[in-house]
Length: 116
Length: 115
Image (cartoon, rainbow over all chains, first blue to last red; front, side, top):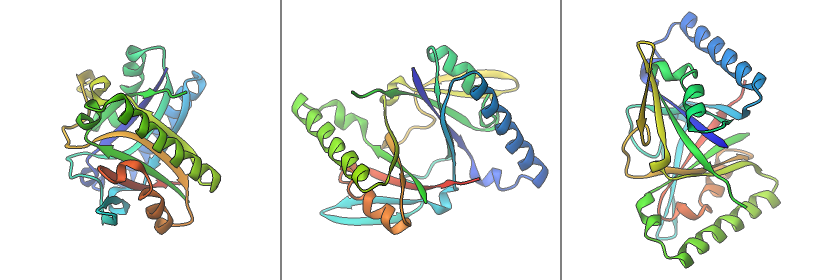
């Protein structure tokens, strides 16, 4: 079954990381991606540009209203995701805990609604 | 350029749908998906099961902590996404406005970080 792992972190804290610390995070993600690919469970994954580059669109009374920034102010912001093919939620939790961002932020696991 | 289109809305609204309203919403999304496919913009998309089915994982001091539910309490919750190949942000905004939940939710556009 497919599960989406949404990786949330505090962008302001991340911006304070040194070059070495950032490289270490980058390397850790490379290792995680390799592991899930080797296990044959990797469906997809992407990193997103920070929320400073986000635009939120709402249509109200027929008018398109774009605003700069994410949909809501939250302590942690979405930075990327993986979609993994897991046996069950237990396996999804086991894998989510290996995502580097789980140590400093939050990984939200969402079962995918498979449509016809 | 690739953009992730994140679809947020108040799940409690859907929970009160009649079967007809639910079907109408599915049909609206089918039509939108068909349009972005025909325009050659469609890369990926999924619907997510509502947040009562979510589990949030954090690792603190080497221990795996799990909590039921999403990462935070928000008025609107993530219900699905598209990844689209758009000419630029303006086109992404134009397309985002066509998404059914743009009318009663919030559509967050995030440029994908390309390595």
